Length: 226
Length: 248
Image 1 (spheres, each protein chain N blue to C red):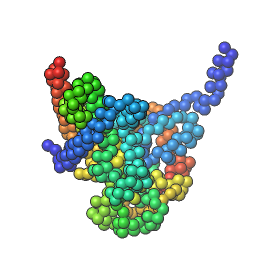
Image 2 (image 1 turned 180 degrees about the horizontal axis):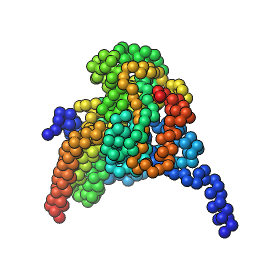
Image 3 (image 1 turned 90 degrees about the horizontal axis):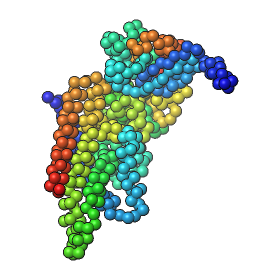
Image 4 (image 1 turned 135 degrees about the horizontal axis):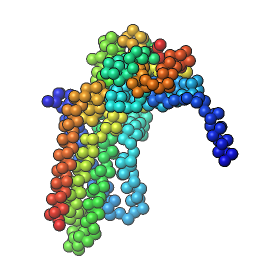
């Protein structure tokens, strides 16, 4: 049913969302842990910065990422000094932009899950002589598991659905930056409504299944812990 | 009471035309700057008001088909106005070419593009920005030009596509693409190219980029819509259009 170009867009989207989700879990976990436990005055400003992409229109965010990562921007100057060239119009560039764009959707659920554990259990573990790392990996992480599942699903889904940012920094290159949302937009603009419908159905089916699984899992997790 | 009467009287006297109407215009993104200038003149001359929306032509087509309240459509091409007329969404016989676009190879760097566009065959750049040829008439014209120069396959790997001509211009002006094919209207101000370096692509390198205007069905009984379509062809408006680099 799908032609080669549409299939390539789907595969690229899945690849992008997977890489971004993995990176977000690695980057987001320490941020979330710090936010859940700190009493520093920096907590509020950092939380606000993490949440910014929820408020900023994606095309605005995309435009400034394009400028920042461009040859005259600060990020662009840095990547050029490292001999990496500039990031716009590359898959790596999309990954960087998407990590920034989806960060709040990963940090917030994990932070809430860590906060919900409370200090009691961790203090009990400490009295049993568990070192800080040990407490983190054997107590905090397993208890926060539902938060991680939510974070991973939301991060993945949000990246799949992203459009404005990709449009701005991507350059619509097949196999590199032409993801499903951009491809659908192209079809609509070119009046190829049939092809647009086809891809949109795939995207909608995928989104429904993802969210359905998330809610089913969360319900089970709540019932088990009750 | 006296003050109220005075205010009402003042408003009646100051309003430029008792029967001023409003026209909702959907205009091609590449025509943004000249259209704003023309609308200001139009309002001064006729007292009617023009509400302007700018965007991609394909998107406007979808919106018009689905009941958007636009009364005048200034397309970036000639196909979509014709299609709208066929489908009964535009007033038959109201169609005409209001501007012919000029393609330019442009770089934000003052020394990159030479007056003959030979930079293309030298190929000393990483990215060449082109508007999506499937969607944007300027993109299609750029591809025809490259085909004619025999450079399409050589440069293929360096293409980055903007979804419309405005985004393509953004890629070049931010320096992310060293050069790109954009509309002359985007880099021209007061009759000259305002920055960077450029090759104005000769008209015989591609089919003319005709941009057609049409009155939409919703504008049939709107005096402002009729007036605007007439105003766009008058010498004053044509002079503004030319000053932005359109051929007409």
